[in-house]
Amino acid sequence: MDQTVRPVAPGPSDGDLAALVASSARRAQLYHFFELALAHPGEAGHEYFRQEATEAEFTSAYGAALKAESALGETGKQAAAKFFAGMRRMGYEEAEAAYISLFTNNYPHLPCPPYGSLFTAIDSEKRLEEMLAIKEFYQRHGMDIAESYNDLPDHLCVELEFMQLLSFRESEAIAARDEQLANGVREAEGEFLDRFLLPFLTRLAELATGTVPDNPYSELLEAVRCLLIAHRKELGVPVEPKQAI
Image 1 (spheres, rainbow, N blue to C red):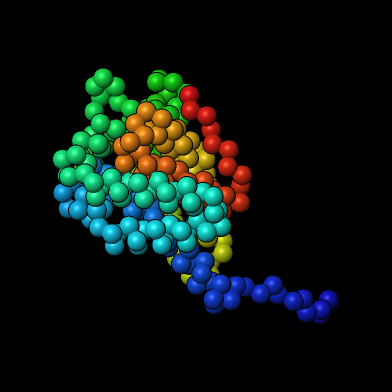
Image 2 (cartoon, rainbow, N blue to C red):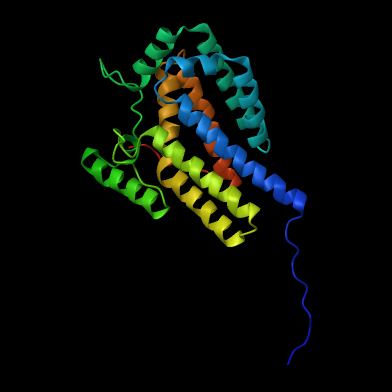
């Protein structure tokens, strides 16, 4: 019998582990921030996004999250700065009007419908199949839509909330030194980004900045786009967003 003692590859040091936990937790917080910022603004929310402290906290977290992708980070920070400046410049009614005109007003047309299946389905007949596919993806990874929720499962904010959930799970798995679980969560993140959120958000940001560049929410979408691409690169697979149909 071979009694040779083979060396075991060392795991991450406590410092490295803490940095990895903080990185995925920070990303989860950013997804949560964008989910809140891209929801219909209430007066309290509008006031929150006008505060310089909010911008400073966001900029610090965003810069740290995209540190390895300096060009994307700079583009995203500049776009986010324009969003915050717009919120401070606009009163609540103006900010609400900017949001409605981009995402919910359908006259004469809706510039940026916040539903992924409109961008990732092959044609209109396939939209229901796409919505069922994303709902099944949620359920497969332990998330479901509440019966009281009055919107569709492919809404932008729902997709961002799901990415927040996965990022927090990744953070918890790393903290527990559960490499298998952490790798499984990362695989789910990559699959969801490739299959749903990245092609959707990429096209949405292109439409927004191309049709209504002065709208602060268009700038916010650009900041999200940069985060998604940086996240996908961090997962180790080249980013090649699917072309919108």
